[in-house]
Figure 1 (cartoon, rainbow, N blue to C red):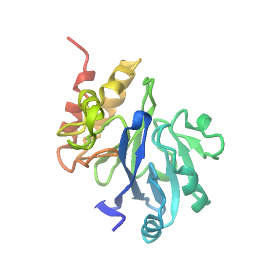
Figure 2 (figure 1 turned 135 degrees about the vertical axis):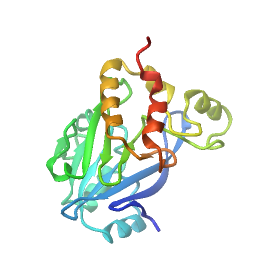
Figure 3 (figure 1 turned 45 degrees about the vertical axis):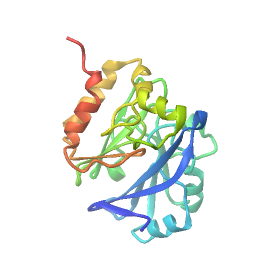
Figure 4 (figure 1 turned 90 degrees about the vertical axis):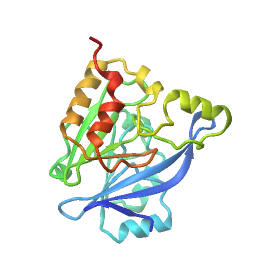
Length: 233
């Protein structure tokens, strides 16, 4: 099945691999949430195949297409064409990058009214690579991270890329913040405040775009993942 029900009202779908800079290839994952009115909220849309489209159409009408950072936009145009009634929502910086797309708005710290009763969100600012918006599905206590948390399996990369990935922290036993993102934070105080808000949600599960989902002890996993961000005593 193209859509796997992760919890009541939330589904995951794995997409095709994407190739980034220097030949690094990554698995992709999107999340679909059914809102109170029945509309579907699609997070980080993956490549739109006929099978994925049929699976999505089977559970409801697509109402919102959400890009959680300015790097996850490659497949938005295809989804916007397939679902012209859907609103596109951009992470900070994406609207300027994709002037060809008509966005309904830019994501901030307050969820838009259509999904505010089901989903919380917070911007993690101050990163020179990308500004990511983290979401929290309230009913299932599931937090959604795009690129700031990654966990690729051992053996995913080969040769020198495997060495770089291990040193960067992309490979591990549980999701962690790759070192390139850690050093790219220019405003750690702002990032700490955002992470405190995320931990305040007390998430049970953690879903990442690049790695296996965490189904239990999500808050503890996040505390370990962001331990490096704690102020030094």
